[in-house]
Image (cartoon, rainbow, N blue to C red; front, side):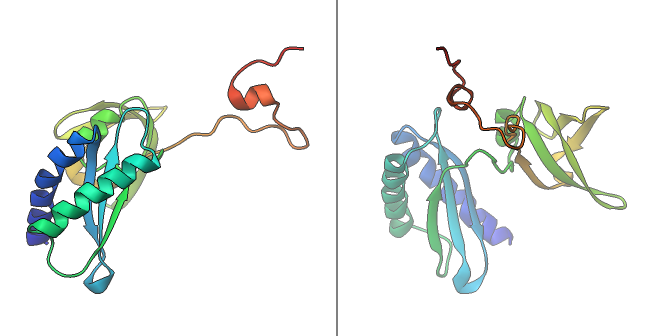
Length: 175
């Protein structure tokens, strides 16, 4: 596993400048799966979001780099994507970028695991702090098994009522 992590980190360092040249941020690089079912997932982002043209340009640039030099050994599928509205949190930088948003964090405890749902209020190099409503919890990244931001939909219309056009766009409707 350490060898794969080193290969992915080397690849991340090679990809970052090419992705940056496209005015994109290299959000994450991960290799998942095993054998012939492995996927090299490269996640790119930018302020305001990523469109299909940006994903296409990033795919071309990333594919050329992967084909040209050391990459994880064995077969894999290259997937270039955006982080979406519910973003996986894996690095301190991911947590720092999510401060102020709703999160779901699964942590190891002495009795198994626990899932925390709350608002991320602080993120440092070794841990983060989550407001759980009734208390605040400091979470060491070393104890996290899975973490992501949570997209919260606005209030739903009551049954039998339709949302007005103004409600869908956030603009008032006048007669």
